[in-house]
Image (cartoon, rainbow, N blue to C red):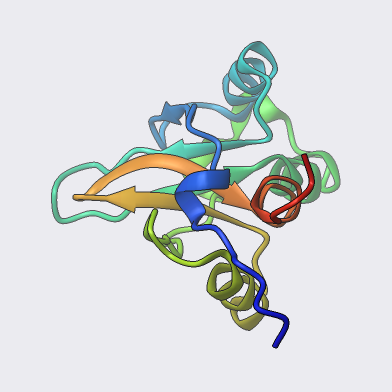
Length: 134
């Protein structure tokens, strides 16, 4: 152990997240992603008993473009991941990275008090979570 001081997820998460309805067509979702500069979208819960979904750009590439499907004829709910693993904002980034490895994921919404407040990824963990990179 090197005595390394690791940050928490809140320190490196992307705070701007965009939510869409699951009935949104993929073409519209792609336009939203382009407009806000995002590679992922949170899919809203239908009600308080539902779970959040997650649409990644890689889902669109694999499940729509790669399968030669018309993006205007596919709804987000057909290709999204749901339910998704969420992380707490105060989780240590070491544990977040281990969680990603354990579940084979690279992105996770950050949830606090039942609301999505950010998004974290391997990229953000490494780039913004490691101390002494400034």
